[in-house]
Length: 474
Ligand code: LFR
Image 1 (cartoon, helix red, strand yellow):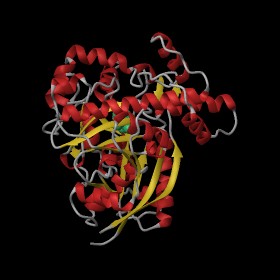
Image 2 (cartoon, rainbow, N blue to C red; image 1 turned 90 degrees about the vertical axis):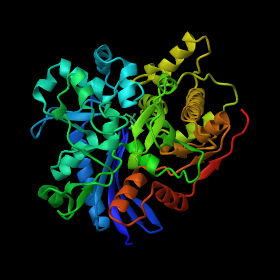
Image 3 (tube, helix red, strand yellow; image 1 turned 180 degrees about the vertical axis):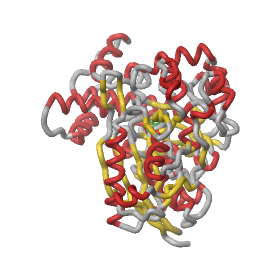
């Protein structure tokens, strides 16, 4: 087997990156070629993604990657559910951000057409008010679907920009709510019931499939060969992160902790019980037909959004690690609020909302920055521990250890408190699990690594030294 070098485009809700990965038999390494900011843009019609800016950042990142190595292929992943509408080859405006509040109207419309329990039996998705099908109901009611003839999810849109090919990668398509949870194909009947044209949705591709090669102007702008293929990876970032979670023995659960904390286990088939539905657990499509049985917890968004307000307030440099040290040193018992409360979804004044939650629930509201931060960390850890317990019970798997991957793996306080509250060891890392999963699936498609997810995870475990947090009483 040969060693290949590939580019992983990994777009997150707060930042994007282009990574250069080397992969081969027993070989795995990762280097950052570019990192760029991403975030919501508010205009009078709502909250959007600046997709053209992201695309030009991706091109610049690929250009940098091309100066570092000879790139054998490109893979793209991003957050889920969001999409662009197209008519022919024309993109109809900036995609909406899933935190835009318009989705509430879509929920009412969809549930009046197909009640939630019925939906769950078809798509296996937890209720999140921004799942694509709710967003599309709003598009339909505002006349946009009279004009649009195609829906492209964000990574598929980027792949189209690069190759001219319009496809729907299956792991991310599973987050639309329109994929059949057992056959993994588009659910035409459900589309009919929701008055969505079946032709809106492109053909599905699987991770590892070749999407196409670079358009000539893309090759010229990036300095890459026009023959460079774009290969489908787990284009839902969480699917890629789970690929690279080093669960090498039975009993491993995961928390993919970035903007969101995605907490769950991998299963061979979906869990569609009433208990799973009532606990709001999702069955998202994983790489190689596995199921990601998980629950969305609010994640680092709570902390990031709180800190962003303090940075604005201070108007100068901000020392995040000093804040986390101060939070770790807090000895009083801080309030534990419900991190999953929907009031925390939209951007805004998080510390004000936390204070309000506390007042409404008859507990004291933290006021110092250290206490607020500690309260956020404790509340996240409590929500993580509870979701881990549910994931084990609902799936029938005995959870013996928790893997935290993504940005949260570099927050020792969060890792330790999650271990304490769950009463289980936490194995932290790799931080860049998403990009690594993206690289590995490309490497496998190019024939540079062995086949099974287990052997890919072995390689991750051998390459990245995890940090272990043993539980202490709390
Ligand atoms: C994480 C993530 C979650 C999804 C949320 C919204 O980045 O992809 O898995 O629920 O973003 O798309």
